[in-house]
Length: 425
Image: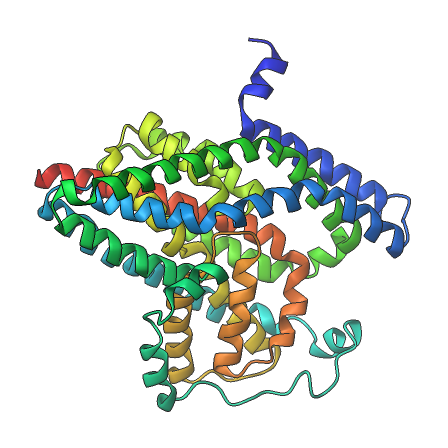
């Protein structure tokens, strides 16, 4: 096989090449190494370079609601016996909560030991972004009186509005309720609806597979704009914060390795090597949703998992299993708390844990969504959300890495529950 044919056959390699070329072009256009284009020219250039990425993201947002809803309902309905449904449904829920909690505890430990926020100067941040004293005002955070309202709003009151607004957690809850109801009814009475949902699932997955052909162009455009506008030196200034996040994500990969060895009973090296394609795509697109078709393909064709398990765990995990995102959010909160010299109480830390856990469940599996949810957590504990401005310059890189960890977690969960359900069969 020629080098050209090999490259065209492997999307992950195309993406890596696009990343490298994009980095080089970005440095050339930037003012640290290259010709130093002015801001207006860079903005206009970035607008055109981002066209493939915007198209790709629009495709994802167009089909995300029907794909998730159909995938969850079909998977639950097709599980078969009630014993398997109980093992997977309850088991995977507990599993996701445990792994996400582990990631949060890792984040708290690393952020407390390294204390990345204590290194930077808040005055420099204020001058760089032209912030007023009001922007930096610390507010009162979450209290015990707020708990009843937060719990009461877990169940969506208007599912149609949730669909129209793309509220993924509400959509997930509705899908689980519909799926459980269909599984409890006689097969003949739900067959027509099941066939329709299966067709929707296949159509939307095919659309995603077609859209992934423009991923290398999307990656190139995003990287060029980011490097040229932000600059390598500015990004390096947040190095300690980035290292803290990467160390935490690396620790989660070690947790997954132990699960693969001890629970899934698979060899670590060969299993992780089969994760390569979805991991690379997740790294490049920073979207678990965009990676889901390849994740499913890897689970079924390379890992040889039971399709009833993979088609339930992976769509569910894509929506709710955000270990990497939860870890990043907690470290970011501690980083900004240290930057603003805010002493976090035990109640505040508990609120951060619970909020991060719930926020990671409801985070849309699209690029940059973690940053949006982060602002909610900051407001909850009383940290000025304007601090996110400092994180935006390096968020894209961290988003790519944490998305790769999220996808690895979904595949690990699939391997684990494939083995668990086989043992109970």
